[in-house]
Length: 125
Image (cartoon, rainbow, N blue to C red; front, side, top):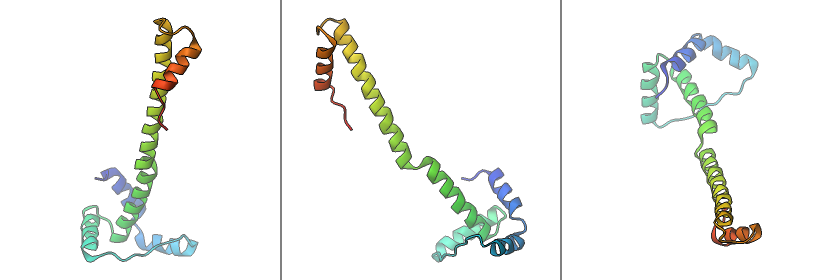
């Protein structure tokens, strides 16, 4: 699930965990604490142990990783990208249809082609 190199980098940067915690307290960097249902805490302990980290260090890693991934790959962002792509595709279809109508001489001028496209290829918003 997580790249071993990412976990190793975190392990090295937090290898002096007590000193790191003292620096955080001394610098006033915000910190959080939370309660977990026991079955989640047990899973967290197991995963932390597998990666050679303390529970605190691994929880920090998971939080930061989740926040970074959420911002970059959120479903909302992906849906917006797809929506924009569909709108662009629809506009291209309208333009191509206008050109074909005019080329095939089915309509006599650009205004007539534009009216046909507007009537028959309504753009969904």
